[in-house]
Amino acid sequence: MPLSALTRKRGLASHPLAKLAWALGLALLLGQAPAAQAQVNVGIGIQLPGVDIGINMPSYPRMMAVPGYPVYYAPGANSNYFFYEGQYWVYQNDDWYESVWYDGPWRRVDRDVVPVFVLRVPVRYYRQPPPYFRGWRADAPPRWGDHWGPDWAQQRRGWDQWNHRTPPRATPLPVYQRPYSGERYPRAAEQQENIRSRHERAPQPSVTRPVDMPRSQPGEPTRRGNAQPERQVRPEAATRPPQAHTPAAERGRDRDRDDKGGAQNRGRDKDDEKGGRGK
Image 1 (cartoon, rainbow, N blue to C red):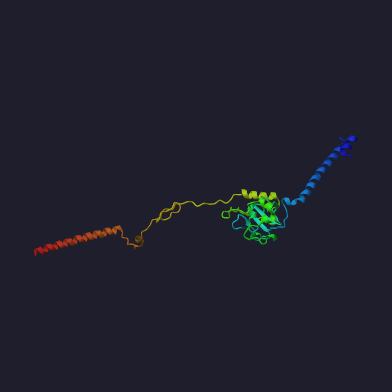
Image 2 (image 1 turned 120 degrees about the horizontal axis):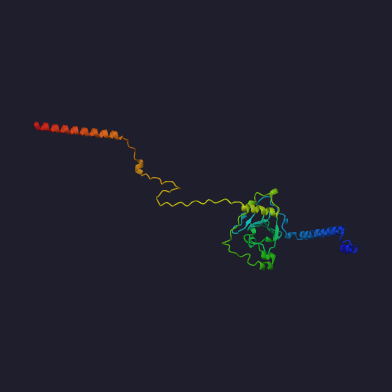
């Protein structure tokens, strides 16, 4: 007989013990619901973040750009490991996984929504290519349409067609994650988001632009800042030997002596001229 019917029959609905029994029963019912939900989550855990895909990156990997693609790959990784548009991508067991941090947690992504430029990465950049990649061109994307069937090829029609001459630019790598490895690596999504937010709020180093200086005309010496223009010296003036310096007083005495001497000589000449006439 249900507990509510029993209490009404016996007139115990208002008894304190009955109220306690009601509270305990309700708590048990509420406690069983999360447990049942947790069992369901375990069954479909591949759809949730934090999937263990068997990849362990002990430190920030060395990433290199795929030539002609806005995608990076990890040449030293033991997996098909890529980076595109702020997310890391891994192709493992015919499934794609993505993470915003280099070592997870990973989330499975349906092949119908994987970015086209990730799908376009040539075969040679898959460090662990699956067996069905054999025979495919190394410089071309995997033949996903042949592998995943015509339905997928129809839904993702045009994924392998783009302008190879003008590919979009690759986004910068999140190198702010490099200091975090080992025990410092943030496993919780909230920790990862906090670190990313702090990095974005941090002041970026300012770029000092050179000040445009007035251009000098041909043959004119270049001026820097507020410096005065240098006086040009003619070559002949620069190579002329220095002359002896004569004080002005000495030059005056020399002129007096020259004048007196000249006057005396002129007087003698006149006397001689008179004497000659007397003779």
